[in-house]
Image 1 (tube, rainbow, N blue to C red):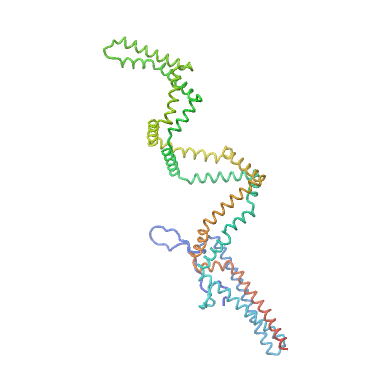
Image 2: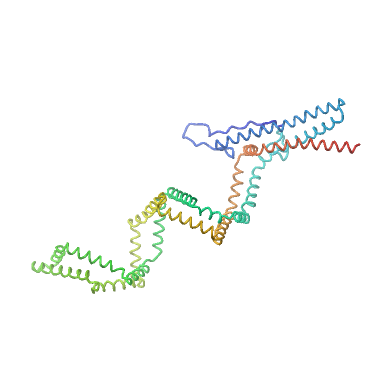
Amino acid sequence: MDTGRTDSRPVPVERAGPPVTAGPARMPRRPAGPAGAHPATAEMDAERRRGVRRMKLIATGFLLVATVVYALSKWAGASGAGPWAGYVAAAAEASMVGALADWFAVTALFRRPLGLPIPHTAIIPTKKDVLGASLGDFVGENFLSADVVRARLRSVGIGARLGGWLAEPDNAGKATEQAAAALRGVLTVLRDSDVQAVVSEAITRRAEAQEVAPGLGKMLERIVADGGHRRVVDLVCVRAHDWLVLHGDSVMAAVKDGAPGWTPRFVDRKVGERVYKELLRFITEMRDSPEHPARGAVDRFLTDFAVELQSDPDTRARVERLKNDLLARDEVQELIASVWSAVRGMVVAAAEDERSQLRLRTRASLLSLGGRLSADPRLRAKVDTWLEDAATYLVTTYRAEITSLISETVAGWDADQTSRKIEAHVGRDLQFIRINGTVVGALAGVLIYTISRVAGG
C-alpha cells in the first residue's frame, strides 16, 4: 500500500546533459517528455509532488484510524460493551473497504498497485499514446470546429471591442508603437542580400515580360500634346547656346580640320568662322523664339515617334532589344538591387522616429478606424465576418496539423515521466477521493448495519 511516496521506485535524477567525454564540446540534451523543464517549472513540479505526498499521508491516516477503530470496536463488542460496538465496527469496516477500493482506483491510474500485474492498471503509462490521440481528437472536435469558432467570435464582438480600444488615443499610440517595433524587427531579421536578389529578379522578370514601347509611345504622345516637352527643348537650346559660346574655337578648329587638303588655310578659317556664326545664330533664334520652325520640326518628330512606338513593329522590336540590353548590364542590376537598401533605410528611420509621417499617419489611421468601428454597425459586422472567415479557414485547414501536434507530442513523452508529471498536477485532488471513500464508506456501513438490525428485529 502506498503510504506517502509518489512511486515505489526511486525517482530518476534529471541530468543537464550526457557525461563529459574527450572530444568536441556537445550540446546538452533535454530529457524526452514534459519533465525536461525550465528550472522554475521543475521547482513548481517538486512543490506539487510534496503536496501529493502530504495528501497521501492524510488519506492513509484516515485508513489507519478506521483500522484501529475497527479493531477496538470488535474487541469492545466481544467484551460485552453493548450494541453501540456493532454500529462502530460496521462503520469502521465499511470505511476500510471504501478506503482500500479508492486507493486501488487512484493508484491504478499511475502504476500497478503493489507491483502486481493486474489487468487494466497503470492506465496512464500504458495508454499514453491512446490518451494523446483521444485528447487531440477531443480538441479538434470540440474546440477547432467551424461552428464553435464562429459562435465564440460572434459572442465576443471583436469589432466593437477593437473599435472602442482603438478610439482611445493612448491605445492607438501603443498599437502604432508595437507595429513600428514589429516592422523594425522584420526588416532587421531579413537578409539584405536575399531581399535584393528577390527584388532584382522580380523587377527584371516583370520588365522582360512587359513590352515597354507602346506604353512609352502613349506617354510621349500625352507629353507632346500637353506641351510638356517644351521645357526640355528650352533647356537643350540654352545648354547648346552656352556650350557654343564657350567652345567657339573648338567648333572652328573642327571645321578647318575637316576641310580638304588642297584648299587654302585662310579659306578654311573663314569657312569655320562662318559655320560657327550660323550655328550660334540658329541656336540663339531657336532659344529665343517659341515659334521657331525647328521647334515645330521637333514637335512633329516626337509626335511621329510616339505613333511609331505604338504601331510600328520594327521600332517596337528595336526598343525591346534596347530594353533587354540595358537590363543585362551590371550597372542596371546593381541599381535595381540598391532600391531595397534605400527603401529599407527610409522605412527603418521612419519607424524609429515618433514624429515621422509614417508613424503619425499610422496613428491617425488607427484612431479613424476605431471611431468608424465604434459608430458604424455595418463596418463592425464586416470586420466580425472577416475575422470569423479567417479563423474558420485556419482551423478547418490546419485542424489535422494542430491535433496531430498534440498526439505526436504526447507520444514522444516518456511514459514514467508523463505519469509522474500528471500525478504531480492532479494527484493531490485525487487523494480526496480516498478520503471521501473512507468517510462515505463509514456512513454507508452504519446505514446498512442499521437497516439489517431493524429488518432482523
